[in-house]
Length: 394
Image (cartoon, rainbow, N blue to C red; front, side, top):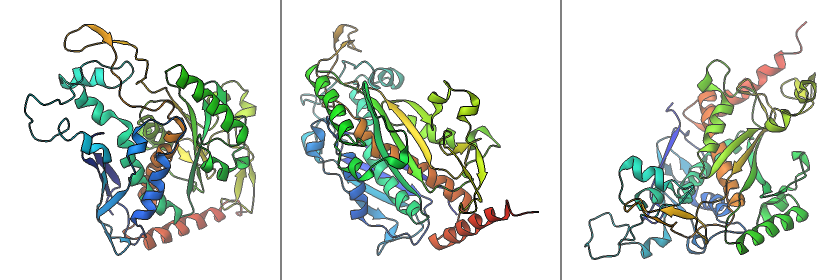
């Protein structure tokens, strides 16, 4: 069995994005329409910028799939950038005539990757950094993850997301069982109900008038995850650590919380711990009365839903730019402006789902590894049966 991994390549205004996924089993049903349905969710969102009016993301499967089924070999995907036609000279791979306008950018944006990246890599044009640092790259992640989501669905694992807050307005729903997921998918701000939908949009409208940006918190939940993914034995084997790293890698994300992590700090210990009781109806033979831990204890999944809350800051690029500097002249200037969202919280939800799917898929493959989907399913089913041995011993 090949270890699971994925790589992406490509720039925001380049020809497109490449994706390579390695380590997925053979005989998984997949097609381009399935991937496109998942990718289209990333492009929706109240407060989105003009780029989404240009792009209609579709991933072409170039290898690793034959007659609608994975081969067990590396899968490669190609996502065309429709906006490339407007950037053929500035983003040319070949050298261009010095007289051409290549859209050199030296005015950096506070809060963006272009300042640190330009100095780190000794670039005299910050476009060399911002093109790859752009959230456009997340389209490739969602494409890769869509295949992982299909794999996870074969094992009964499902991943959903919603917006918990936009700016100063927050959801009052804490019980995930009461979330109307059908409404969330229809909502432009991925709100849990009509009241929240209106509140979140009102914030975004206000922020847009003030020519700035706003962030918030989104929640990603994995249902049906089996007990035992991850390990307590080493720091780098803990699944919550891997999830946190995957989420913090998303553009503009600055905070990750598992379960009720931050709220738990305000309560007594006897109000926080998830009490366990015998339960013959649960596949584990036991169940928890609550899920404050977010489905993870000691670096391992405990069989409850994995709940992750992710804080994403306001986008750095604004229609009313902040004061900044020119990295070549050293002069104080106004920060440059490129197209951007007013609020990207709802659009970040599918990206969060993607990163959770990629992380869980890697853990599943490591624990139940096999070369074919059928082999992994047998291993998975056999493992779950062992739980019934507990709680029945005299």
